[in-house]
Length: 175
Image (cartoon, rainbow, N blue to C red; front, top):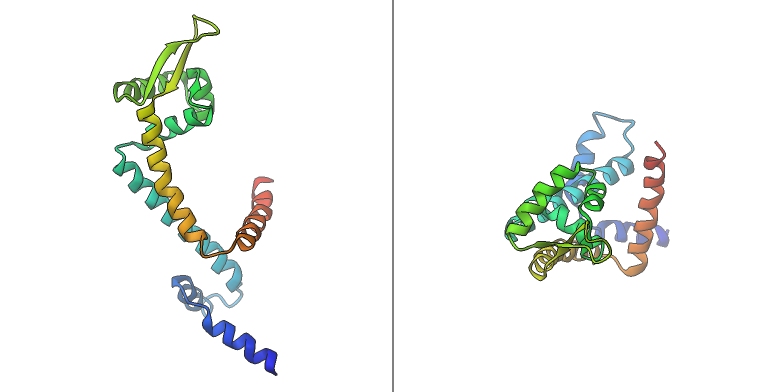
């Protein structure tokens, strides 16, 4: 009986969120609804939506269009130097589309094009200090929000959450 009292006290100490009310509203309408599945899926969608809004605001704050950020991100992911064809592959774009992006980013001082040291016929794209600072600034805004949200969990809980989501994603990726 004492264990039940402890569980009840723990349950009442858990803060409620918007999703709790959402699930309660739908249970009478859909009696077979699994509240844990609905709660988890709804919360994942809401967290994703929240982070998307933060990311979009950070792009505005740093004067970047989404495609510009994606290009800087792809370039940074290659150590700050890549051939346009490598960026096109990373971004799943036609080379001509990457050329247009690079033109705009170069005009803003975020990237520079140079002849490759390995093959003078090849052009390399380099992330400039200004481009790296802009990319990092936009990344930091989102990173801080991710850490703020997941900072409510301790390291073991974060690892457990990541492991659980991995199991879900393995099934999703199998399709």
